[in-house]
Image: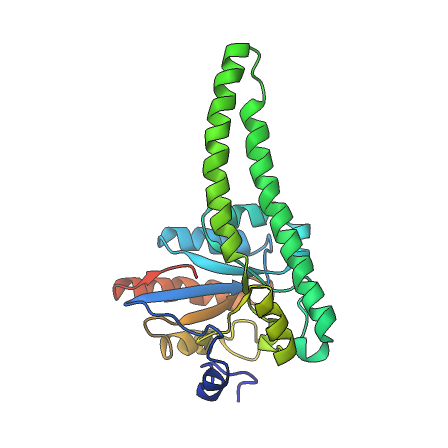
Length: 252
């Protein structure tokens, strides 16, 4: 028996109707990836998604962003959505509410710092190597135009940063209420693949998805090292199967 719910329980949907489990969308699937960014697997995920013109949402751990900022930047550059997964992958049931919320906000700060670092680096590159004053002026104008465009894009990203998925799916009501007051949307799942569980075979993981996903499903995968073997087996097959059936893959 699985130690987790492959399909999000109907009772919990009734008790917490504002927590996101699925969305309206004819022939649309919302893939999500938890626990990254990880250099050993996240770039592979990004390349695989690109091959199918698929977008997804990455619920990032703040400490992993701190350790692997280049991989995090790659997620942003490829126009996927970003969500918050706490700074230290905390179990909400085992953490005091104030400490839990503080950890989420610490992750948010890391997300924002690394997002803004990308914008700053763009501006710096615009001004590097310009020796002629006229060229500098022109490049500055171009840089300002690009900066305005980047700012609009990053403002959109900021909205995505207010998505939160609790690690292990475990969060106290008191924690959720405080995060909602911070304008967070709590994202759970409609279908969880089980790629993180070594007791589940790769084929069982694939069946978990193919038997349960329907239009509007939010599906959980993990871009983590322990999930990588199953993920590399399952993800291409899921993308191919639903693409052939006319589905598209969008970010939250």
